[in-house]
Length: 323
Picture 1 (cartoon, one colour):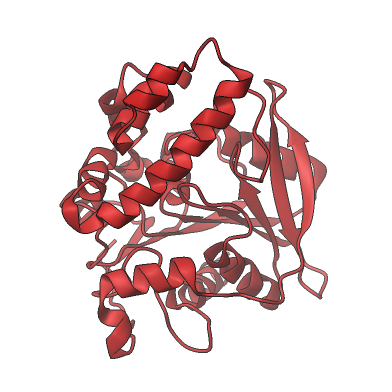
Picture 2 (spheres, rainbow, N blue to C red; picture 1 turned 90 degrees about the vertical axis):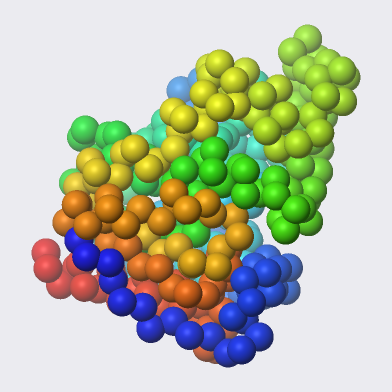
């Protein structure tokens, strides 16, 4: 599908990618989303928490929202999607990845950029216990990579899944890791690393035989974390093997569900490989929009409704009208 034209042009302040990223991560507030939590038990007896919010009208449409690295179902970029979905006659369920809902998860595993089996279990739960005719997927950053990989690798996607919209997605993980470790992104990598090491220490309480103090001390970069924990806990040889197997870039050509990918050209988290122009041109189901501005999940727009949120609704309406 040819690359889509974009209409996104924020005011002068938010044309700076770092300002857009930091403002949206730290200061944006989305109010009026009343969530109800549901806990589901996974096949390995671990758990996931789902945060539901509802349209005021009866509906057969559901939006599943996946957050990014060290996010959760209550982050404001997630709430923004849930709110606009509820306002447009959709229920929304915001998925908290393992260990991201305020409670340490039970298993040694947690979550990662390519862990699609948990998304499969969520979808299985929702299609088994609820009766939605139409399900849409919406993911940000890491959560967007999970969705793209799921759509590209899964042979039997449930018929209820009609479309997906993903935002600020590092479809090539090694390149994104290298960008995050660059000097201009140091403030972000420090924060991510601090949060991840805190969780590693919490996990150590449950698994002291697997996580020693020396392992924790050895983690000085995000790659170190993936070498020491992510790869070991999830069956990869090392960090680079994890990045290679989990990057969604290699799965884009196989996506058969209409999918909109929005990556800003000034997103400092993304390497050049994260703008999959050729893949989009060669797949009629992959719609690629590359706004000049937006930073990382920072598409500030009008009336506290972000461009990617209004764009999601227009894209989903377009798809639904083609049913």
